[in-house]
Image (cartoon, rainbow, N blue to C red; front, side, top):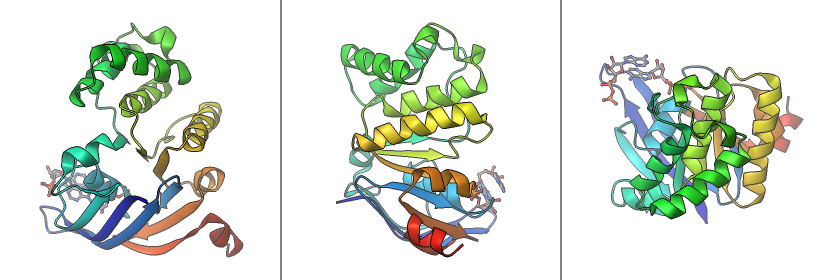
Length: 226
Ligand code: ADP
Ligand code: ADP
């Protein structure tokens, strides 16, 4: 099964700039996948389109077989997204931010509360459950974004630069958390411009540059050539 299939994906922004020039990408179920590339390569645009935050110009995107054009609800149920920017309500409490998200998926409050507790505990935020988000440190906010993305137990988790600006200690504990999620069956895709991060975590890698995939390979193969 394919967790994510992208075919012929193009994106031109309003100013005519071609950010994606025909991306093809396949990520298998269970994979831990890195989309690598320099700043401005098109990583965020690609993930933005998959998570329907950005409109595509043309091309096909399927999440576990659900086409985002014809079955966006099906795609969304299978997908958790951690964007780069903190986009939660800063005045809302940590626990409520996570359970509110569950509501968007039609998950009953009782079940949402169980799931919120599980992920807030795993991510070391349970003590902060009644704290307004604006009081959290940057690293805590990043983990809150992850807990919120997981509350509906998606089969595919996508993270855009998950450890940007995070100190080395927290980075390692986030890596451990993601590895555990992957071992338990969650397919993970992340973007990074740290080769080190892709090397530590991922089995397969695509390299994107100027809106095109320039390599699509296993980590082992890539490292042998460096
Ligand atoms: P879309 O085609 O997805 O509707 P737009 O081209 O309308 O996107 O751009 C969305 C907004 O982002 C616009 O207000 C645009 O000015 C702004 N923007 C322009 N250039 C950049 C850039 N390089 N990076 C981020 N945002 C930009
Ligand atoms: P990456 O995530 O790899 O750093 P992005 O997908 O953010 O790359 O950006 C790819 C290209 O598209 C960059 O040249 C960026 O300036 C441009 N871009 C991103 N968002 C917008 C926007 N809203 N409007 C116009 N150009 C944009």
